[in-house]
Amino acid sequence: MLNNKVIIVTGGAGLLGRVFIKAIVENGGIGIIADINKENGKKTMQELKNETGSNGIDFVHLDITSNKSINNMIESLLRKYHKIDALVNNAYPRNNNYGRKFESVTFEDFCDNVNSHLGGYFLTSQQMALYFKNQGYGNIINIASIYGVIAPRFEIYEGTSMTSPVEYSVIKSALIQLTKYMAKYLKGTNIRVNAISPGGIFDNQPDMFLKNYSRLSLSKGMLRTEDLKGTILFLLSDESTYVNGQNIVIDDGFSL
Image (cartoon, rainbow, N blue to C red):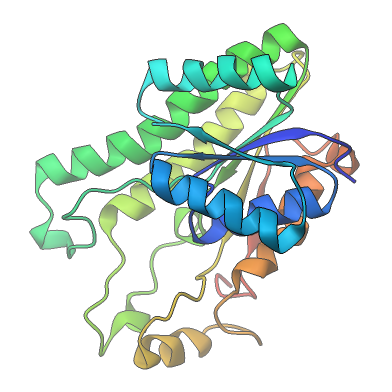
């Protein structure tokens, strides 16, 4: 299905990233774990090699907020693989104060989190687009969120210490617009840019949150990471050649 496509997944050692990498190699691609955490990235690479029995998994250190780091990654991958077919912007950078309620977020923390997450996706996409233009083709997929499409359902956080950070909605809604902007701007370059907006993904959240969340879903409740595999594989494959500038929502009807 992916025919030896070389695919970078930023944040590839994270909750979603490792599932994406595994799906890529199980479907004939070469999965590149691009992560800022060297120790965790290399550990994840070895674990996934053991799980899949595939050597088509690699690790490269990447700081998505550093132009030098991004270009070092591109150069090292070209030396080894002589091409890069796709980029999945999946990293989730945030500072230690991330997750506070609206009235407790400082201006400095707001800017810091928006700059690292949204700014990092912009910078990585910009530099990869320059490479893709020279290559003659490319594919960029941004991981956004339903909270980039709708306002947060604050009622699902009642009875818990959780909230939906204001930075998250700002970042994810901007990512969807960045996706459309880039797709249109890159017209005629054979580079496509799409986004995936998942609903909430299970990660051992409190029982009260899970109950509140499930009341707004149509059948499943929270997604499992594996529920995104089909869509990511579709967008990475040649089956989606003419899908461009789109935001695909996967949320079991939560946003209805």
